[in-house]
Length: 235
Image 1 (tube, rainbow, N blue to C red):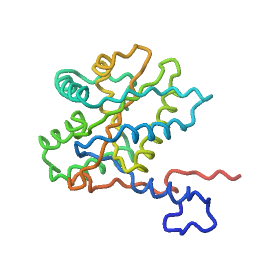
Image 2: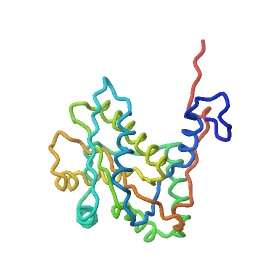
Image 3: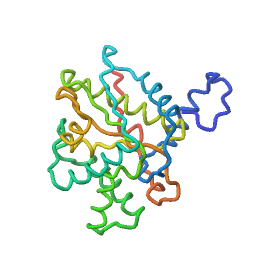
Image 4: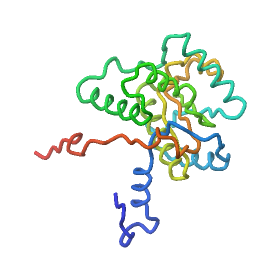
């Protein structure tokens, strides 16, 4: 990326610099204001996300956006459902986090709990976790589903769509958080949205405008270096 470059010699649209800025600015927002995002902005984000590539151009994602009075009912019902039902995702969650994946996950959790002053307090940490199901106060949530018949690759394609949605939203100044946690309550989501059985729930994206004054939005996760994830095969 070319952050800080004045753009000379680059694409006249400044694509590289703009993408770098968006990537650096995006983070998982965990406290939103109640201000709704204009429908025109949401539509522009969705139109950008529609440019996502997919296997054989199948575009398997389907998006249900819940907002307004429907969101109030959804949020209330979800919170009640979560405390009275076991997790039942359509697509199995990871069985176990081991080694470096466990370390990265723990580092993220510790940073999150420290940001709101509940590190080491199990009850308060559990209460923070429950904020997932209140959608962190977001005024909108998008539920992403895939076609069951397309299997793993359909899910991969939807993951690309989710990534593009997050970056597009950031470019419009809209905060987001992708939430696999909601997929653990797939039966509730399916019933609320009246989805057919062949639509598999992957995740949700809560979005809106960030509460910039909330301490939870001040921490950032880290990324390992390129050399940690890339093997160069030359011979």
